[in-house]
Length: 130
Image 1 (tube, rainbow, N blue to C red):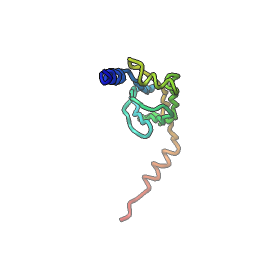
Image 2 (cartoon, rainbow, N blue to C red; image 1 turned 45 degrees about the horizontal axis):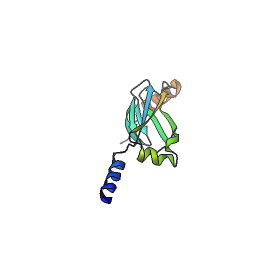
Image 3 (cartoon, rainbow, N blue to C red; image 1 turned 45 degrees about the vertical axis):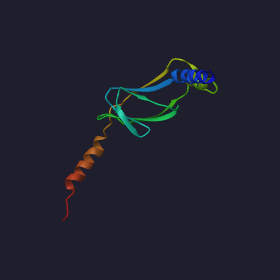
Image 4 (cartoon, rainbow, N blue to C red; image 1 turned 90 degrees about the vertical axis):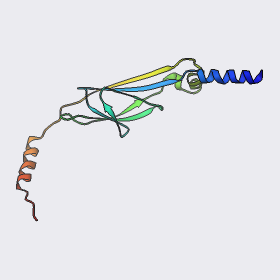
C-alpha cells in the first residue's frame, strides 16, 4: 500500500505542469538577422525558448541598416521568486507560459560620402607590387 502511494505521488509530480519561457524579438523592418548572447537565432520576427532569467545581449543586423545592439533585461515574474517557484515549477498541474516580446526600430545606415570618396580614390591609386 505504501509503495502504491509513493508511486501515485511520484506520478502526480511527473504529471504536474512547468513554466514555458519564450522570448520573441521583432524589428521594423522585419527580416533582420538576430544574434542573442553571441549565437545566431534566425531572422525577425523570431521566437526563442529560454531557461534562465537575466540580461540577454541582443544584436540585429540588416543590409542598409545600422547594426543594433542592446542588453535586454528579462526579469522573472513573481511566481518565479523563491519560494513561489517551487509551486510554479512542480505543483501547478498546468503549463505556465511566460511570453516576452521586444521590438526594435532599425535606423537606415548612414553614409559619409566624403570618407567613401576618399577610400575609393585610395583604392584606385593602390597598385599591387609583385
